[in-house]
Image 1 (cartoon, one colour):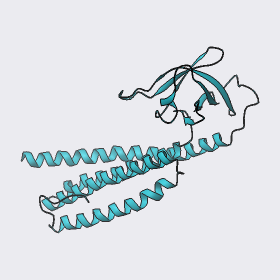
Image 2 (cartoon, one colour; image 1 turned 180 degrees about the vertical axis):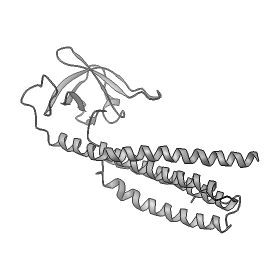
Image 3 (tube, one colour; image 1 turned 180 degrees about the horizontal axis):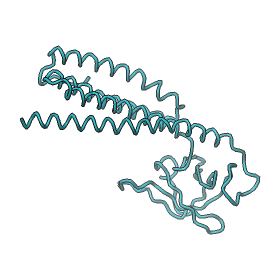
Length: 244
């Protein structure tokens, strides 16, 4: 009885997790268009004729001096950041999504160039000439939103189906089939995240995310179908794998 209740509780948790994750994925997908428009606006923005005194849609390259950096390694939820100083002495705090390729090499006193757009520093050029996007930079956000949507929706759908299935169709075979679906959903989500990581690391265009993830997803779906059929036929033993 306790084992049966525990199984039901796990299935309910998987179904709820799937619903929440689907919602996050849909929200991420709805942001892709806006992120694309913002990136295009930035790439098409003209250079400012002079230093803007207020938030402006033109871009301005502003010299800064590095006061200090804080990489926040090992601190959960804390973004890497740099504290920059204008020639006037006014401080400017800039956060980054990661430490590479520029932030990790900055030292106090280094001279850097920041690109200001709509009142925010969106890119920083280090002493070696390399550029890095800040947390406010618009470039790359469409791919991030797309990759997140693919990961969340694929994992969420599989979690929802795999969680509800054993609740509406009782029996050991259906329970195993539900586990097969759930853990293949984990594989689908992980494949999307790894694809997004590869796209970001290699600076590939956004279309590389679905182009790479699509074939991987088809292979995982084929594996899920085969294992699910085997589970329903009773061909999966207790020690049989539930995922490819």
